[in-house]
Length: 147
Image (cartoon, rainbow, N blue to C red; front, side, top):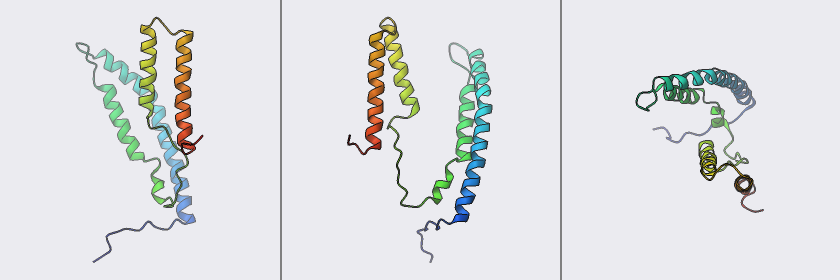
């Protein structure tokens, strides 16, 4: 019976060259997809608004997002990482929050400020303080938590 654990193949120059070429091709495909998605997303969003009934938008925009997410998975832009050496050091650390969570925080901040009577100098100062906190959090992730 075969050994059930699969070993990662050794990385050689041929694999690296192939991964570079494939990555470039995938970048082009991904970029073309994004280029097409910009106007199509606007049209799908407008169509969703126009076809809304009783305050409920049409599904066109979210169907497009679903298709975009599936295409992102299919393109698998960073798939060559499966060939990366096992001792690859993860040098770039991103914040725990993803882009949607960060934008949600920003939106909530702006809505709260609007409810308080508009964005004032004090609000700008609080926003800058929050931004510094975000940057400090990111810095502590990249420096291993020590300043």
